Image (cartoon, rainbow, N blue to C red; front, side, top):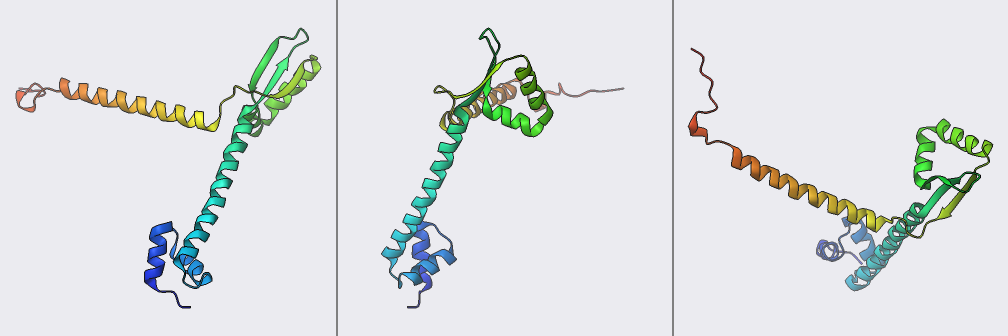
Length: 162
């Protein structure tokens, strides 16, 4: 069955896909708009699940911590494993030196999952709150600056040299 431009436009408006994807889905479903919408929504659902799995992966990675304790059981270092990995990428020798030093001084190195760690949604919320605070403060500063500006007709901003 031949698919019309009107059918493609209708599908694109309802499901928000490209012309190519709308056309191929309509052709696959013999021009049936409802079947095409259902198929595209199922595909989109699978993509949403993939995004969710990335968030789950990021949350699990953020919950891992590295702890280094000395012989007496005192915690020397307790940092997120992500920081160790980033430092390893940026400064390989610093991490190697630290691990060798910990082993030579008989320290216990432990990687564990912290239940009270930060997750992606809390990071997003914290960033949004910070941006909102910056916006409010900058608006206050702008309003104060506009109040303090003298009128342009006053001539106070002129320097006359005779």
